[in-house]
Length: 480
Image 1 (cartoon, helix red, strand yellow):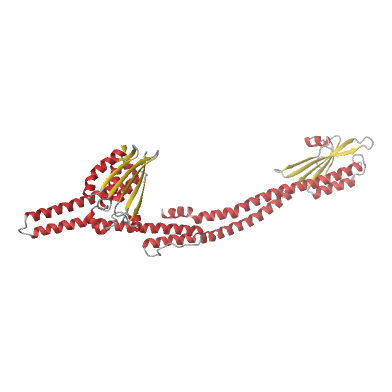
Image 2 (tube, rainbow, N blue to C red):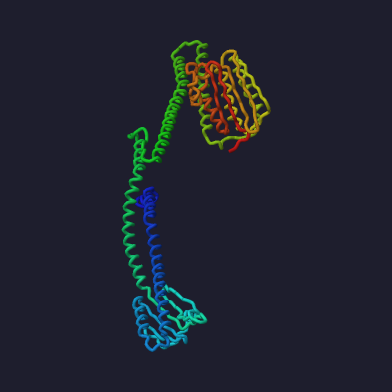
C-alpha cells in the first residue's frame, strides 16, 4: 500500500506534471512534423514523377506522329525510345492504335491483343488520364496520340500511349527517411525526458525547501518566518504564510491570555470566599453581626462567580454557528423600553439620566434573547462607566433595509489606544476601578458576537473624558 501511495503521490505531483508537459512540448511537435513531412514527401514525389512521365509521353506522341509510326516499316528508333523510357522509370509502355490493338508492349505480353478500358476510351476522346494507386504503388497514364490536319485544323486521334510506372523506389525512399526520422526522434525523446526530469527537479526545489521550512517552523527548530524568494509565486506564498503565521501567533497569545484571565477571574472569588470562611472558622466567639457581614460578602462573591460563569456560557453559545439563532419578528421599540425599564434602577443609583428616542416604529427578524443581551450590555456599560449626574442617550432609527441603534453617554470615555481591544475577552480599560464597577470583561465580546451573528455591524467612537458612542446596524430581515 505504501508503494502504491507513493506512486499516486508522484503522479499527482507538480514534478510529474512538469515532466509530462515538457515531454509533450518536446516530442509531440516532432511526431507531427515527421508524419506530415513523410506524407507530403510521398505526395510530392508522386506528383513530380507523374509530371516527368507525362512530359516524356507527350514528347513520344509527337515523335510517333511525325514518324508515321503506325504505317512505317522501320519503327526501331521509336521502339528504342519506348524501351529507354520503360527502363528509366521501371515501368511498362504500350502503344494502342485506332482499332484498340496493342501494337507495342515493352513487356511483350499483350502485343497483338485488343485492350478496351475506361482510361483508353477517355484518352481516345482527347483526355489525358493520370491515376495513382497507393495500394499497389503504381502510376498509370493514358495520353492520346493526335494529329492535326493543316488545312482543316481538325485533330484526329491515331492511338493512345499508356504508361504504367512503379513507385516502389519512392516508397523505399520514404521508408528510409521514416527509419532515420524515427531514430532521430527516439534520441530526441530520451534527451527530452532526461532534460525534463532535470529541469522539473530544479523547478520544484523551492517548493521542497518551502515544505521543509514549514515543517521546521512547526517543530520549533526553524526560522520564525518563511523566506523562499526563488519565484514570484513562492515569494507571494511566503508572504501569505507569514501573515497567517503572525495571525495564528496573535490568536494563540489571545487564547493563552484568555485562559489565564478565565483562571484568574474564576479563582479570585473563590480565594475571597476561602479567606472569609477561614476567618470565621478561626474566631471562636465571633459576634453575630460579623457572621452576617462575612456571609453577605461570601454571597456577593458567589453571585460574582455565577455571573462570570453565565457570561462565559453566553460567549460559548455566541461562538457556535448562526443556525442556533431562534429568529422571530420582534418589536424593537418595545424591546428597548423593557431594557431601559430594567436598567433604570441602576441608572438612578448612579445618578445617570436615561433617555430613549425612537424616530419610527421598528420591527425586525432577530433572536430576541441574544439581541437583548447585546443591547443590555451596551446600555449597562454606558451607565456604569458614566459620571455622576451624567446621561445616556439611546436612539432608534431605521430605513428600508436596516435598523440603527445609537448608545451615547457622557462618561469617562475610552483611550484611543484601547479602542481596538475593547471587544477582547476580559479586557478592561480601567483595571484599577474594575472591582468597584463590577462586570466580567466579557460584555462587549458578547455584544459584538451577537451583532455579527445577525449579519450586522458595530462601531465605536470615543473621546477620553467626554463620552462614548456605539453605533449598531442590524438588518430588518435575517438572511441565513
